Image: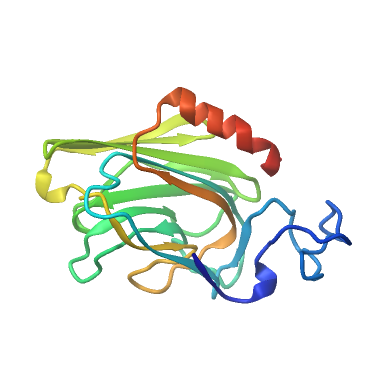
Amino acid sequence: GTATGSPDALLFKQGINGSASTSTGRDGQGFPLSRQNNGAIGFDGSTNYTDVGSVGGAGTFSNCTISVWVNPQNNGGATDYGRIYDGNYEPSIRQRGPTLQLNGTVAASQTYLFYLGADISNYFSSGNMTVPKGQWTNITMTVVTVGTASQTVVGYVNLNPEGAGSTTDSAKMWVGDIGNLRIGQGYKTGQRFFAGQIANLQIWNRALSLPEIQQNYKAQRSRFT
């Protein structure tokens, strides 16, 4: 993706002068680190986002898994409903790809919503997923599509199933491509910036099994503790 915003908000690997401490660590260019060095991108809630562009063609992600590590922070400049990722690939007809966002402002216990559907007024959601502020949490979503008959979403928070949604209306189903994917900002509005850190966004073109989701989570979690 292409990063937009101040370079000091991007967290690269530490240089030879750095250490694990956020107070003494430095990135590869020698700039002091303001956050834990775990390969994440820091978003300021007002200007920073990453534009990934087009991902896959029609039907590529009709069955898919999307996993991301997220650490929300309070920020006075952050817009409500900040987007972790936004796949609104056709804003002219408001057809929505996969979108994960905060549900309102950042509070002590933050609620998330996952949207997927053919029109903004006809989306279906995996439900309200609650995660703590100022702490790393993994949110993994699976999408299973059966022809044009049904589409089902299941959400996992740190491996715990937390919400599901489905539709049997073919007119509302997502067709499975992502034409405009942004991380940390809403694509359609160019607003709804996210405040905090986002790391390791991964998209598979199939629905991973629970043992596979567990394996990925266990392999990554030591970076975020």
